[in-house]
View (cartoon, rainbow, N blue to C red):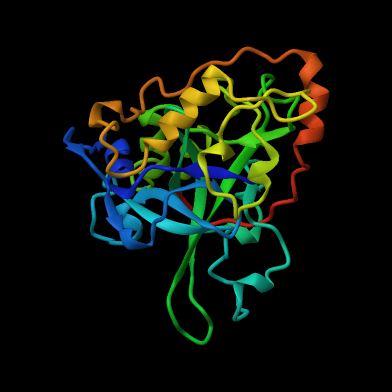
Length: 295
């Protein structure tokens, strides 16, 4: 059901936005791994790449498991056991995985914890996921891929779809999900629950094509209008903010960066009058099937 994400922050700003405290209480920022591969985007779809937060111990066995790193990974999990020479030959969709079956299906077994970031509006939205590392049978560069975990939709968003991304609310939840050496998987999985502590708005069909990569992909629109409504004060504000969120913007100061605490804003249940329109506007969820390490 999750078919689009966005992260318009530049690499350095995203790193600062992911600041955390390690198990010694020290303020840290995750180190980028292969930062040169990361590209900010207003419109990320399956098969594109996106920023993923994970424990350093996944990459370095003797590392402190509370240390975090950022990596750019491809969206759509390719299990390490996949034997064909081309990941595009996979016959099932792995952009999402269901929380209730991810520990049972072979395609998701042995996966590690991962924490994935998406920048929307003024908050850093942290969605739980799993990742894996696939090596081409004939040899070559390792491919890191991830999938987003979905749960039953909360009552506030169930009129849109019966599933929603699993969202980690606050740094403690993120810590438990990522620190696989200290927090058992069965305990971490308890964090995967529906949340009503989010805000949402409809956007234009401009986002349907991943070739469109502009702030308009995230700008709010008015549903039910015969044509897309003219820019409202709120959409103008968001567009202005998005345009200034890229690296090097003189208007984007460090104290404007998001923090984990109280990162989500509650949105009241929408009225039924817009439900039917939004249901038509949104597509159906594909059937996911795949899994690996927590991120």
